[in-house]
Length: 211
Ligand SMILES: [Zn+2]
Image (cartoon, rainbow, N blue to C red; front, side, top):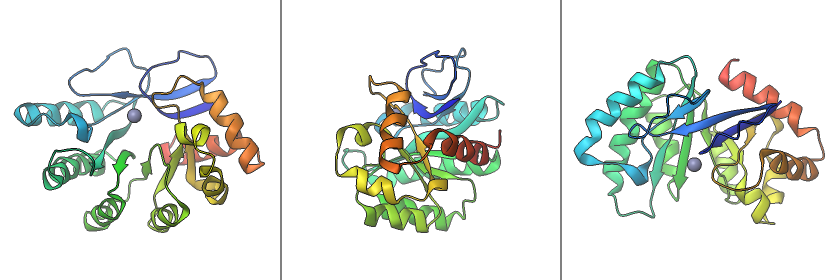
């Protein structure tokens, strides 16, 4: 079984277990396994309370694997303190319903680390689409985060040396929005790590998502 942490489109492929991202304003009730959250790009102030309510409601479904993607993004116009308030409200739900968190984080790693500490979050937190250097990876790993790799592992040659050093029990694989299959991501990862990545990610997935 290939485990795909994060995708926006169900592949409906046999032998793939995938967490399909859902938005509160566009929920697909047919999704087998999903995550749901308010992405910082799509915060809608006029409908925020309604969207938060939907997130809380769907999070309680047994096939909801995680909160997210949610997080912080410093490259958008939405003020950071507003993003933080929406993010923190969702994190409280993750704590209440004991769900892991799939994070979108752009240039706000220190802020996300501080929020995890401040709210004393014990649920696993996974940075999706990781693409930064090992210094950033290390500070996240030291603070208990998991890292998920996909697009940039295929596109960015320098990321291989970062991925190589990530402890085997702390990473996931994902396709997010790319056209390549999750098998292609696993092939690349196995070449870099020189281990059986499939088995490793299966172990990580079962531990973090308690399946
Ligand atoms: Zn995504």
